[in-house]
Amino acid sequence: MSFWDWFRFVLLYNWFFWWIAVIVIVLAATPFVHRVRLWQARRRFIDSQGAKLLNPQNADARFQLANLYADGRSWRRALEHATDAVRVAEANPLYEGKVPYHFLRLLGDAYYHRGRHDEAAAAYGRALEVKADLGHGDALFGLGRAWLRKGELEKAVDALRRALRENGSNLEAYFRLAQASALLGREEDVASARREFRAVAASLPRFARQRRLRWRLAFLLFPIVRHVA
Image 1 (cartoon, rainbow, N blue to C red):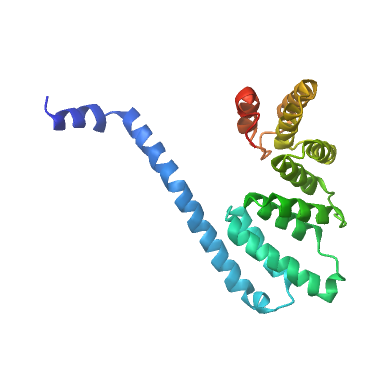
Image 2: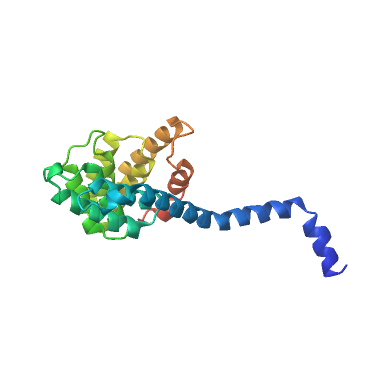
């Protein structure tokens, strides 16, 4: 059988081959499609909010743009615009010197994902000092992760436990708490975090966006990934 005959009969007429090809193409195209959608969303936002962005006192438009970049996981640009939003809010008398909680929380997220953990912890700390209508769970979780990365384990455990008291459905928080406890040599606390994680993961509805499979695998491979922050 010639190569062409083999290719035609073994591959072209093999449905399994085409399923694999489709999966590979989809996986390869997903990042590109995501970037195109982010670019389109950014252009729509700039077209509709351009005048507000030109206003040197409009902090909210800058925050919305930063949040748009954060949703697209473009953290360098998110940090740039979140920093600008906080700066404008600090100077705008309408805010009475109090930067909104969600501005500071997003600034902390951007610093964290850029690997600037000292600045992330400082931003989250500022967020905790500001009133938040929905509570401080996200800032506490971010602070716990930042302290974990900085090696301040006792502080990380305290912040993560407080975060879970405010939002007990945060699956990643259980894993990070288990990590910090493991680094402190507290195996009973690790086992407790794992039990709580399993109970919460099993109770969450299917539509909950908590990446259950990822964190279940992380706990399954915990002896390997326990030191991976």
